[in-house]
Length: 108
Picture 1 (cartoon, rainbow, N blue to C red):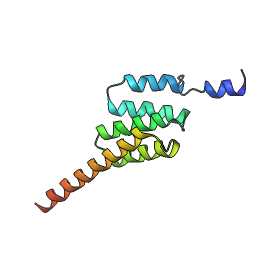
Picture 2 (cartoon, rainbow, N blue to C red; picture 1 turned 120 degrees about the vertical axis):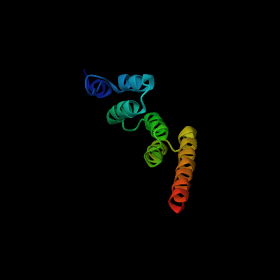
Picture 3 (cartoon, one colour; picture 1 turned 135 degrees about the horizontal axis):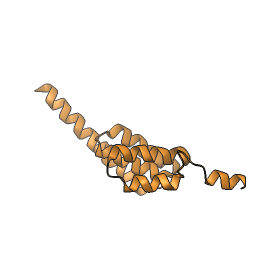
């Protein structure tokens, strides 16, 4: 097997990036999905789609700052990625709303 073949077949815990990706997409638990996307990203750090999908799971968990960081990474890799840009704007809006709600609660 040549160097390129070995690189493309790199595995973590016996699974390739593609196998981890399929597990992530098929999973329903957001925490598990993030864990699986982390494995994909470890094997393929420049996979913008995995960063974007990981960010969406952080949105589900209302961890908006983590989500925004993932969308930023996706956009750093692929600047013309409309889904990541839209998702980032959505997460920023949700973050602002949650910060405003916390302010109102602390004032009451």
